[in-house]
Length: 435
Ligand code: NAD
Image (cartoon, rainbow, N blue to C red; front, side, top):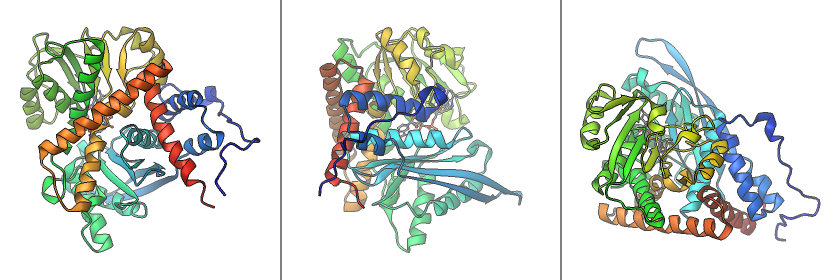
């Protein structure tokens, strides 16, 4: 018998939000957007309950022998939020700010993101509480391998596929892949994405998230009747996402007037040479000491008079405290969760066109999907093919979300959640509940 998700006794019971809706709790920020979209979709109460829960949460202690012989024990999490549409997909983050609510929120965002761009994955995320900048390469390798061993029960190309995120990279993915492969006794390239090209990585993956930001920003500018050439851009975060987005936007004729990272930022009305700044970061690790422009703080960067603002660092940078001072016409959310739910309303009121994270930064997971497909097929595509297919998916997804926004007279964030939730809930209805 088909599962009926609309039993008459069933009703939506929302937790007492005020009890724990701290503005900066990312899980609550995600849930409040989810609730709004669920209401507009008139989501079945049974599905609503299912989608409010993470499927699996693992927390592991990670003992690591430091180079000086001391033992340090780190804490790591892996959350599989939802796998209805396919294997879980989501990055691994190494950062002191990692906590379980953040990892749950990021895993849920991955679920919605994969659904927005309609790739056959669910969502997951992992994080280890550590400061990788204070660790040697050997310590990082030991940490990565032991964390991988700790979450081994969920990993696999058909079950959960990690990728890089804040402070992790291709090298870390190579260690995850090697550890997994040693444990199962044969080489499994498709267990991670964002790997080095030489071991099954995809051409174009490193640039994919930034490229996706470029594609949706161009779509937004066209929709708003704004030109591309001469459009001014401020980018917060100058790592994988921020630096590549800035470089590709500059290549298209946009003027990058400000960039910043954890050490602060630089403002130059005439435009910053992004490749030059990238070379500085390659040499010194951060933008500190770059010096080619007026030195500014991160708060100042957000409120600059620019056409496009790209927050591409961490979550909760646009809040009720600073949203009113933002002057950009378009915000392209390269980072996950850079805007708090409470700040959304202020941005709406100001008429700022926000391309939400689950759409704006979906280029990375889209090419991760391409990488997984290529690994499993054992046949690799040219960079031009990857970029062309990525551009198609990002353009189509932007237009899908815009259409829903126009139909329901809602902002793009709510529209993206509506699209994602309806796709995930359709699969739940088709699959029913295993009992
Ligand atoms: P990264 O580690 O390569 O870069 C992070 C950048 O943010 C660095 O320049 C760092 O200095 C800066 N930063 C850190 N703390 C900051 C602070 N308090 N103020 C200002 N800048 C700060 O990470 P990344 O891969 O570029 O990821 C950035 C964001 O994009 C994250 O939210 C991540 O979840 C999201 N994201 C990444 C990808 C991807 O493919 N890498 C895909 C989708 C979303």
